[in-house]
Length: 54
Image (cartoon, rainbow, N blue to C red; front, side, top):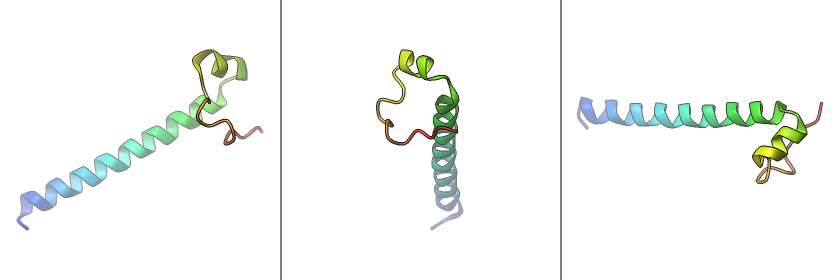
């Protein structure tokens, strides 16, 4: 492996981590919205059992 291949692999890995973190941040934000707004935008159709109520 040369330096460019290693750098490309690291950049790909960091990009995937960034994507996962952004997805989690978005899910947390949407879960904090009031229930009627979440219903209007169609959230959490995929996550009905995973929503935590405080």
